[in-house]
Image (cartoon, rainbow, N blue to C red; front, side, top):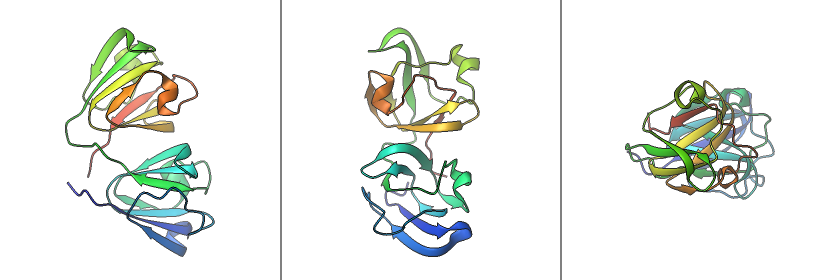
Length: 177
C-alpha cells in the first residue's frame, strides 16, 4: 500500500487552468488557487474540505480523475483544505449503535452497505466505534449525499463525525484501488 499521496488541484474543469500539486496535509489552500473545478488523485486517498482547517463539507477521493466538482459529489468549486486519509489497513470492522454513547442495539459491519436500512433496518446511527480501517458514511443510500470520514476511534455522538443529524443512508470502506 502506498503510504505517500499525491493530488493535483485545477482551477478549471477538465484539468485546465492553474494547477497546484499537493503531497501533504494542507490546512489552507486558498493561497494556491481561488477555485477548484477538477482534481487528479495520483496516489493515496484524500479528504477535501470546503473550509480552511479541515472544516465544512467533506469529500473523500480515491485514486482517479475528477474532471469537474460534480464527479466528486461537490456542491461548489470551493475546496479550502485537504489531508491524506490514514488507517486504511485492508482490515475493516465497525460497530454501529442506535443510541449515543455506545448504547442500544449493536451491529458489526466489515463490508460496504449501499443501503443501511436494508441491512440495519433503520436510517440513524447515533454512535459508532471504528475498530479497523477507515470508513465513509453517506447521508443517502447508494453512496450519495454528504460524506463523513470515520477513521479508527470512538464516536460517542453523530456530531463527533461532524454530522448535523444521525441519518446515514450507506457506508463504504476506504480501500486503495
